[in-house]
Structures are given as C-alpha cells and as structure tokens.
Image (cartoon, rainbow, N blue to C red; front, top):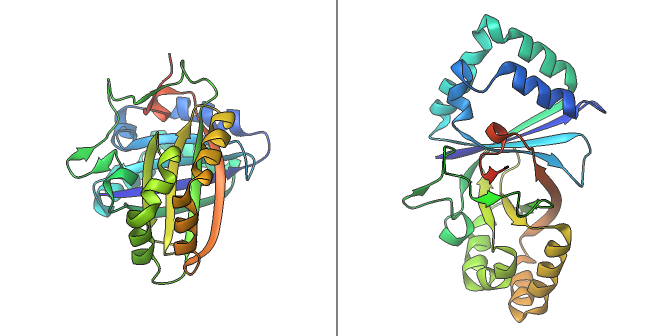
Length: 240
C-alpha cells in the first residue's frame, strides 16, 4: 500500500469556501472511489495559515490513478476543478510508505489495514473537542533511513512512548524530498501535547535517541492540525 499527502495553500479567507465546494461536488457517485481512501482532511493551527492537509491510503500507484484521475474527464465535475484551482495558491503532493515498525503505524501494519466506513471511527471529537494532530517531518541525510529505524527500535520507541499514545501513522517518503519520516500523532489539546512532551523529554531514553539521530537528522519541522468537521472528510473521528 502507499499513502498520499496533499497540501493545499489557499488564498486568504477561502477555507470555508473550499470546504463548501467539497459538499457541492459530493462524496458519492463518481467520487466514491477516492472518498473510500480518505484518512482525513486537516486545517493548520500552526505553520502556514490557510493550508489544508489531506491524507489518503491507496492499494498502489495504479489504484491512485484509477480512483482519482478518471474524475478529470467527467463533465459534471468540471466546475469543481475550475473553482478549486481558483482558490489554491500552491498545491503539493507526496507519496509515502509505512514505517517498518508496527508501533509506529498501528493502523496499517501486518494484517491491520484501516479504511473508512461505518463504525471505523477511532477517536470521538465529542470527548476531545480541542483535539490537535501533530505532523512532524524529519529530513535525514541521504542513506540515513536505515539508521533512523535502528535508533527507533533501540531507544526511540521508549523515548517517544508518551507521545505515541494516540498515533495515526509514521511513514517515509517515496517521492519529492527523499529520506523524510512523517509522523502523525493525536493529543486531546495543546496543553496535553505540552505535558506529554515534557514527560518524554524527562526520560533518559530521549537523550539517547537524540544522540543517535544527531549524525543523520538534517531538519525537523512540526505543524499542528485540526480535523475538518465533516464526516466524509474526517472518517477517523466521530463528530457527533
């Protein structure tokens, strides 16, 4: 399987318009194929404003082509592409593969393969109204990925345990900038995130993990996200 991350930077003030356009396009009919592969749409809380990040899981590159590219030739959907492109200042797409360590990608590892559907919600936003998703991108030196997984297995799992209580996924890049590890973790609030970061940083395992990463880590960026409160766009979450 492969995962796609799409990142749209919208014109100022167009977020509500963009989400309304998704409703006008619809979530069934010819769109049902790629909607069946949605992990979630997320709005940025920190980082680039007016940005929406959407994540998908596909069987393969061919599955992505089949479920998405056929939409461009449907006359009834032409309005959507015209209007969406007019709202978007920048669009980025990248493909990823799951981490080789089960604890880092609990929803997609071994025989576990999460897909959206009735009863598949994993978190309840009614119980966590201030929930945030932390996206962390760690860019490694070329060839550094095997050493990263070794460090994670040796001490990183212990070091990051307080941060991984609610994990969506950890992936590595297949296109664009290579040797990038992307992780998505949930916290009930920003305060919860800060408390768990303090807990993780206080343990000796984190110091060992940071030391192991020092020769290979070139850049780390973190963005906080919130799920879009539309059921078809946030199937991981029970919205009420």
